[in-house]
Image 1 (tube, helix red, strand yellow):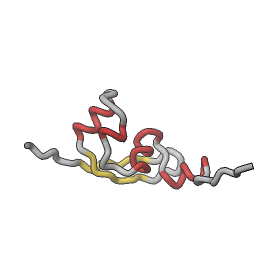
Image 2 (cartoon, rainbow, N blue to C red):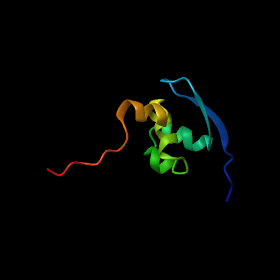
Image 3 (tube, rainbow, N blue to C red):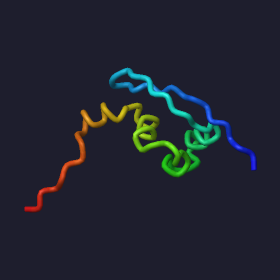
Amino acid sequence: MVAQIMRMYGVKCEKCGRIFSMFIHPKDLKKWQKGGGYIQDILHYLSPAERELLISATCNDCWSVMFGGEEEEDNV
């Protein structure tokens, strides 16, 4: 088995401008970009927040400001 080498990528949040670093296998990134599967399956080793940053260019903090945190449903 040949080990894949991970590369550090800087991904910018388009809302706040911060740049986040993450290590990704380049082959996995290309596979996802070409539509080779779901991001959560291909880049399973990234956190949900990191995957969302790749998808929407929105960091976790900005996402929370825009959409709020998880709220409990009221049972009426």
